[in-house]
Length: 118
Image (cartoon, rainbow, N blue to C red; front, side, top):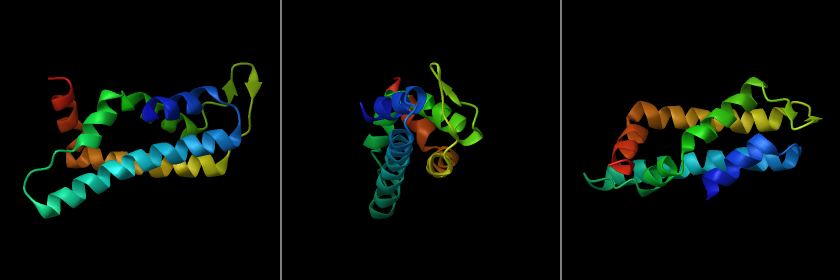
């Protein structure tokens, strides 16, 4: 539900504060996944990565695409409303993308996708 909420807000909402909070939510979802993986990795050899499986199941690729559009400022028109680029939203989106790329480099998202779609 949270992945969908962040995605919808980033894609459909024209309000700067709402888009900023959606980017923060996306960043925290990825950060929570990273914390889960790194905390369990140090404690034992098994890592369940429930959060990673949950966000992959919720189609986090759409959220990633929305974040990418926010960073590149491609998405300046929502419906018929044009809104200005918000540097704070771009910054939060870039932070979320950075964490996601780390998760991908570690192979966490790929493993979660295998688990989720099997």
